[in-house]
Amino acid sequence: MKKKKKKKKEEEEEEEEEEEEEEEEEKKKKKRRRRGRRRRRRRRRRRRRRRRRRRRRGGGGGGGGGGGGGGGGGGGGGEEEEEEEEEEEEEEEEEEEEEEEEEGREEEEEEEGGGGGGGGGGGGGGGRRKEKKKKKKKKKKKEEEKKKKEEEKKKKKNTVTEK
Image 1 (cartoon, rainbow, N blue to C red):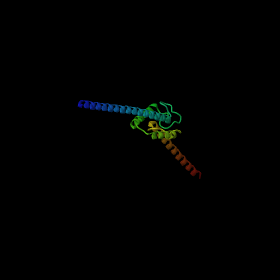
Image 2 (cartoon, rainbow, N blue to C red):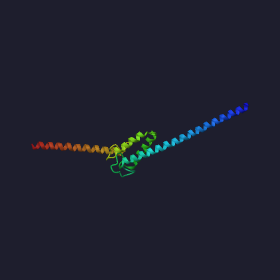
Image 3 (cartoon, rainbow, N blue to C red):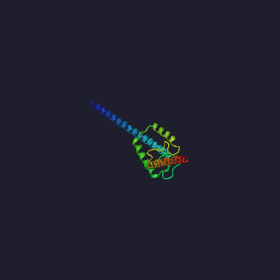
Image 4 (spheres, one colour):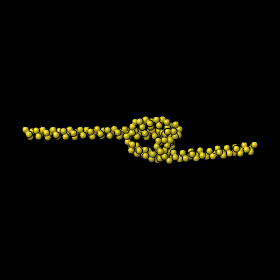
């Protein structure tokens, strides 16, 4: 009798252990599946973001800029855009989990960013080209102001001599 009881107990314990192992394996499978889903979602998000950025920038890979596309690249050198994209990809990998809210915000930005040169668009830091453009604009403005001042001075002198 005692031997039979012992055998039964041992068998029950073995069965319980097997069941626990099976449950653990199932949990692992679920985790793997979830991980796969997350990865796919992340990839999709990254692709969407890249497309949006390209649209905003206007310019494709190297050389020619697209029509009025948006800030940053538009017509910028190819290498510069690639570098920017690499940096942005690294940032995205660090952020990993992002809510759909941010996606919504980015869509709004895309709508604002279209018109002409810069508005809203441009994505990340913009890079060297953007900085150069800004400097040129500033220089031009200063020169124009100088010219205006000189013209005003001349006008004043002329009016004085006429009197």
